[in-house]
Image (cartoon, rainbow, N blue to C red):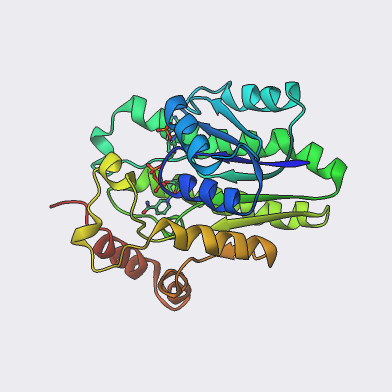
Length: 257
Ligand SMILES: NC(=O)c1ccc[n+]([C@@H]2O[C@H](COP(=O)([O-])OP(=O)(O)OC[C@H]3O[C@@H](n4cnc5c(N)ncnc54)[C@H](OP(=O)(O)O)[C@@H]3O)[C@@H](O)[C@H]2O)c1
């Protein structure tokens, strides 16, 4: 029996993954800080108790948390066959005044925790000769985004690492996909002080991301763009000077009111 481990499972896109995997009768390990919310979600998606859902409440801002998550699974003999790295947050504003604690936490949660979790779990997947990793990045990871610079850089990291692992682990039977959504209707923007309602870009539902991610995993895609517009925005960059790409990103992600 294999488990799907989902970080950032408590709200937004991660929560939608939990609903979808419950519909697919998958056993799960749910990770986020809000233990009570994870418990409520687990009861909501598993009213009959037929699924085996574990709650592993951890703050991924703590550098030791990925190891604790791995040890939690090892102690309970939960063989993780799929990891969904969804936990993450953004911060919009002047880089010069970005709180240092926020900066360190973002690198830890968006970048280090994801890289460590993958590193800790893949030896077991390699031994089984199968497994999957879904990493949630963003269209914002394909170029810098003014006033969203660190967030955009963390998402670039996820794309780069995922591309390398797609090839490196693909040869060992493990599928790695990186999902690159545009604006999605979650609590992300309020937390980041970002204003998608001031952009000309549409805002999609979390289910659009989840359906595309799972389809992409089955098809062993490298990049997954949940909407055609997401794909187009990245594809068109090939024909534009980088300065134009940067100006376009600034226009499409208005952060200064
Ligand atoms: N919404 C968008 O427009 C959009 C677009 C592109 C990419 N994304 C990416 O999608 C992913 C999910 O975001 P979302 O839109 O679903 O936003 P969200 O609703 O704010 O969800 C963020 C999730 O990350 C978890 N998280 C945050 N900090 C954490 C920490 N220190 N330790 C453990 N878990 C933590 C949160 O759980 P707790 O608060 O309970 O810990 C929550 O479950 C993120 O990686 C984001 O960068 C979002």
